[in-house]
Amino acid sequence: SYVLTQPRSVSVALGQTATITCGGENIGVRSLHWYQQKPGQAPILVIFRDNNRPSGIPERFSGSNSGNTGTLTISRAQAGDDGDYYCQVWQSGFGVFGAGTKLTVL
Amino acid sequence: EVQLVESGGHLVQPGGSLRLSCAASGFAFHEFAIYWVRQTPGQGLEWVSGVSWNSGSMEYADSVKGRFTISRDNAKNSLYLRMDNLRTEDSAFYYCAKPQLAYVWGNSPLDSWGLGTLVTVSS
Image 1 (tube, rainbow over the protein chains, first blue to last red):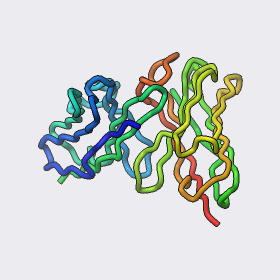
Image 2 (cartoon, rainbow over the protein chains, first blue to last red):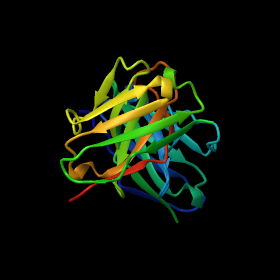
Image 3 (cartoon, rainbow over the protein chains, first blue to last red):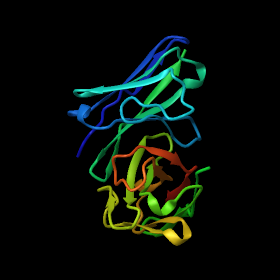
């Protein structure tokens, strides 16, 4: 089965740029999606199909996907960006999630 | 506004059964595949099962295959998950999630999620 690998945690200073990676074999040929989840809340979609933002998601959120690594980038990090971030792809009709990365804004 | 409201979760003994429901509103339910995703408290997301818009396709994670059955009733705008032979490791919040695109099986981001219903399997 397909496996997505994320760092367990990432820290970023307030106002700086956070980068969260998602590794997978040839992930660049798949559509990669990213979700943010805060404690006690359901996940929300923040990036879809590699580099697209849903309405309401700030321009500070961006994504890329190539080779064996997909990346979520959060520019000018704010305290409200704290939370868990999950990458996700589809393998036929099966959803595959990464284990999640806890982002801490210092 | 899209709304997904899960219900049916509660405490059940190992080996027991449960049926979860998800009531959908605010979109053309019959046009969309729909999925169950679970999360053990403090842990990550795990895709559980999905059903296509016309129930023609269904998929299950290996961890639940043969024990869980997904179904939907388009007339009632509802999704169900029948859970049999429950194990302690099935304890989790269960979310239903809607894909962004209609008439697409897999390969669409999940743009709406319910708040989840908690299943606890314990003796």
